[in-house]
Image (cartoon, rainbow, N blue to C red; front, side, top):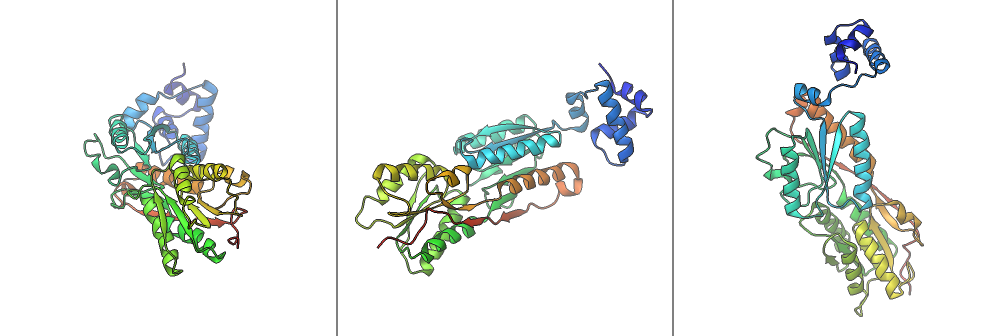
Length: 334
């Protein structure tokens, strides 16, 4: 097996220069780095990951905690994150909290004990990673898609209020006056902002808000839809605030024999591929998930590589999405 010294001899350079070139250190010009890489490849040299981690005081691992990997929203995000981190030489450890506070805390502690270099985190509790006080080292954390509003960690989120305003305003403009919202747990930032945007538009239009809260699950979407359509004053439009809820809404509408948009118009947050494949395709508020995930990787990379960045105050970055009008919305019948 080739060693670092073998690569140095082949490249005609000192072992120290070869080490700096392979570690990505600064002050190594591109031509020298290319020469070292070519020599390493020709010899089949593979650096000892453990030794490199011990020298650099890094494990070259990053933790990711998401609520539900079955949700297209998080599955797509995890895929982008893994690819981007691997390009930078990091391995990603995936943890699924199932939106449970205890699992949240447990995974945060476990990742800290494993000495991961950083954590990307979709909080499932209002306190987020604030309880991570026993970590052996200070770990850069980026809250993604949800945030705890504590200003302790970097956060990259969508403008959930703006999205709810766009979807609700679209329904009001079509002439709907009975618009119901199916929402998640109010302890989560996504729910609070989406409810706030919905309420804002309903209040401006002089309309009564009706909100069915519960977990972000298809079962809640199903039960809430059946409840909404069981009374005498049925909504003419439903706003589903997350894709798992939308699964349940569609199932309930099918079981009830309610046509979309003939009997009820439907708008939904997020834009997984299957929204466009529905009959009719769903009007929704799409989010730039790829861009948000890549920015999380960029923030963490800077925090780890540059001492000045490691001490910089946390920042919250909010991304706008876009309203996508499709066939699931129309003026109310009659």
